Length: 581
Image (cartoon, rainbow, N blue to C red; front, side, top):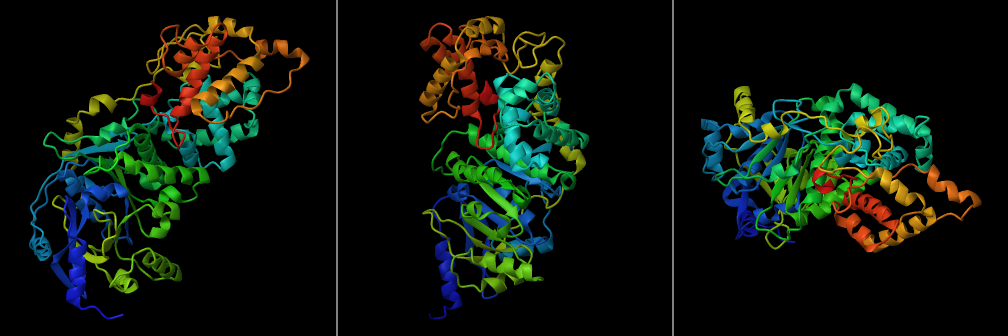
């Protein structure tokens, strides 16, 4: 193969990055050791929902790259989410001052630089910091993500899913850690023995292990991350009055002590967006770009269920207009099924000090298209603020690989002052909504209520209390209506309705052969959870109740509520407050 001249190599890059639509300007190409500012390297805005990877060794400039991309996205009217691990990204709210060195660099790559500020919303996980508190309810967080934080094995994770199923079925709202603890304590108590046996796959020993892990979380102070008011992820999609996208900057001052919590919470935000956003198809620009820093924390020791859920979310959220950029040290930190979906690549320098480093370097090189560069040498000699780049062009084809000197941010590359952050938070429209934690009646209060029905039926002082907008009464009437029905007839009808609604074979076990003493089964069963009064319910339960007659109406309402919850739990087992209304 003929050796290409420098001019030919530059021409290839210029042609490959000549694009028609709006773009994010990344920098200028370096070819054969020389910077060519006429060879601009850019990323089509319409392709940013094809996801991406920003990788490189510590200290090579990954955070500055995020900073620079976030500025341009905001200017283009695209909201951005960033996790501010080191505190540097808060500088987006402060205009930078041009120095002689900075201006010389920006002029060399053809960047018309000026100091600017950007609209920033400061968030803090659980209020652990100066920003607006971001909380999730336990039921919204779901069993798979919670198992990740508790470091449960796959068997224990499956058992926790049964606990969530029990709570859903019995109308026990899991808002905070004490709610989940109360439900598990009930199931492991003498009073809850029968309920535990009905769950089948949940042993008392496993429930005890989960309970101990839960108490450990509380002892570590993690209860403040769960509760109400729950953060509405639609807040991440806002634009400022001038049309620029709001940059949501999540402060993480205690990351080193809670790395698993941080990474899993970010996945909850994504999962919640995935479940709520409608299909959008191909857009001129994404609805949101989500930078997921320290991405390796997501995958270390993850269960198969967790990895499958991440893969599904990344694959499908693109069509809802959300782009995800994983930020980590090497591509090998990301599983192959996820890495294969990251079309836009910004690879900063790698180091090859050890045999393991050399192996990672070769693996990284193998993920790039064929190029005019010796990538093993280029990736080990690239300077700070330089990166090897290939992205998707507007036709969905990879652009030529280009070693690029990256643009400089126009806001401060470092933290904003504490005074600016505090004043921004105090003036935020989100502070009245999320600033103060509330503790509504939920599973803990229902179970602890003296004389209350511990399975959530409407027979105690906590019953009938509105929670999440749902009124409850009529439990005694429903028990009376359903008490005389053959349980096998109910189960058979439940299987038929489930198959009709879900369009697949029922997951309910086939009924066991009838035994002589089965007439007393209904009396031994726990009361059903109370349902909304007649005429007040809607959705699946209401439609089924109208279609069926006699005693099966109350069963249909109960089944509709349960099926509705099952249908609304997402790929991580998540179930947001909005979807439960």
